[in-house]
Image 1 (cartoon, one colour):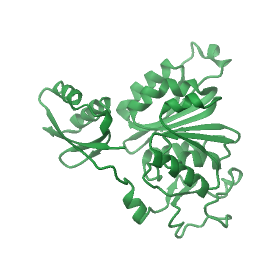
Image 2 (cartoon, rainbow, N blue to C red):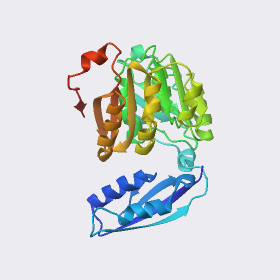
Image 3 (cartoon, rainbow, N blue to C red):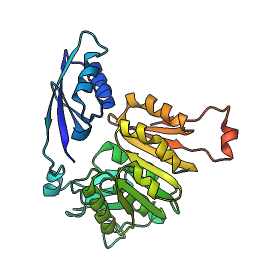
Length: 318
């Protein structure tokens, strides 16, 4: 897939103006914004880039004394994780309960406790004594575990009873989230991604970790080829895709099931909560790491739908 890099210049620059540019450009399909000293850089799939639409949005910028300009250049389709592949990454400790490490480099000083093979984690029953170990080779795919969004979802998974559950990973990247779910006892893990290299990478990482996952190439349309409902759905994608695909997620989510979303900011939460509520979901928890946020949503049981009416939902935030 080819991407276009967009450089935003804001005059005069301010945090408020940057937040607005992030939100408005996100509505135009731009994501993965990076903050620089005097500008912002965003990326968008070239096939989805509408420069006229983006210019129209910026011409109506809600801060009349602020001018926002942008320039765009198409990037070559290359290996986005070339640095990771060449140099690897240091082991990542998630809450002291899960160690994610570069499978090519090994654990380098981290003791996998009772496991003689570091690529095979202790089973879910022994998590109180030893952390879960997950080896990842990030080949052109997102999800080495370094990003806050990945870590928040992993942390959520560690808190959930997954034994015997059926799990769907939307936009699976390296497959890291599905692998964690499988190692925590999920009976079946299904994933999909729009990039063929991510599909191959996720399958490879599953083999490295000794877990089985069924991975499809495509977007939400692949769900029409998957039968049955899921107890847990994971989606670490940008806000616009989450909003567009919310109804598809709910169609395959079992009653009493959970939906974990990440890949967005604090300012995006009201839109996502509104969309979730329209689909009959209840916000259970909001998590934060750095500037990123994570939502845990619940679909009430069929019996609980009527009982829940008239009662306010409980939500904790941390």
